[in-house]
Length: 197
Image (cartoon, rainbow, N blue to C red; front, side):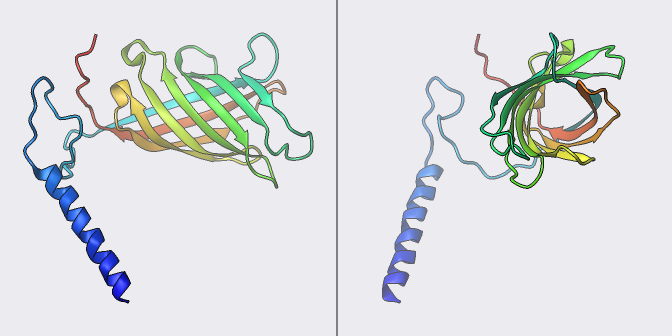
């Protein structure tokens, strides 16, 4: 018991020293901010909402193929361990009128009982006003079910500090491709980028 009390006391003392070190005045010569800084949480008043209604079109074969299997350790259901890479366009409508973005990343068959894929990817925007901005997506896609749901866990460019959710439902598709309707909804906090050239 005494050893536990001593351990907790030493942990508190070391934590206190660390906090005191952070509270010391920072000397800044060339940078506007120190290299490391811990500040009290300030809730952002300028948090902004975004919403996109787009159509994911995955093509499995041919010259316009958007998905490639890079590892396929076995052919048994549900092909556990298979890894695929994707670069799939997100369109404004089913007629492929306007390219909104591209979903680029990896899908891993991580379920041993059904077609359950883990997705880790970026949505790279192609619209001129959002060119170069991204949303970072993670989640689980059950291939045989609908609707699907993914988490937005970050963003860059316009969408700094993004968080949100994507809902998707599978639409009727020909054998060589897959159409999924996506509703993308979330929030971001605008940040000033460093003036690097």
